[in-house]
Length: 263
Image (cartoon, rainbow, N blue to C red):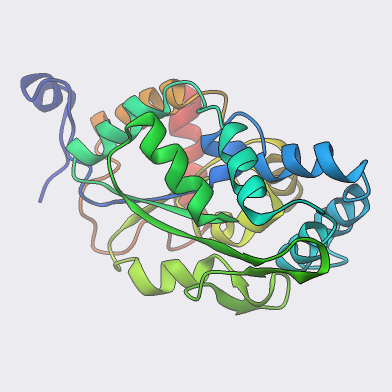
């Protein structure tokens, strides 16, 4: 397989071959304009949740453990939590078109989220988005101390994220050796994914963490801009088959960052 040139893309209606792209998408605050969990917590806990959020951001507690304690602060029925979660979700600019573009090009996008699967599914139906695999949490029981957050079983053990709480477990299960991994995220739960990515689109806490660790990243302002950057990389042949995986070594990530800055 060879990379699609700019001429090839034009002859194909502007659609490059994206069949080597494995795209890991966070939901809350990444696909959506705001963190939906945060909206619900702000509304019903008088900011008591924020101390746990800060502890998670600084690594004092794992993100999954923080979420479990935060959700127990909610004294509202489970159905209300999920309804308000979905109502808070406003798609980031360009996401629907971006997702369809990925699928047309043969990419494999997946949602990997600590957020609630039922809430994400409700948003998907409401927005008429094409179906993709979603790895997300289940909310059970409730309200208050009876709430239980069950992290997706595909998540892995991790010293930073906690037991069965690391999103890289999904990569271990699904990523092929020659895939180009593109990660979209906004929080500490996305950092382990970013460390393994060939290209990172980040905002908020994840952007700060990538900057601190020296991980090349691109700002996620809109998916329209992200799509344009990926189009530019496709025209340069970045997604063409290679003898070794793209993410082998920091040099490849640095080259990606330089290339996207030129676009």
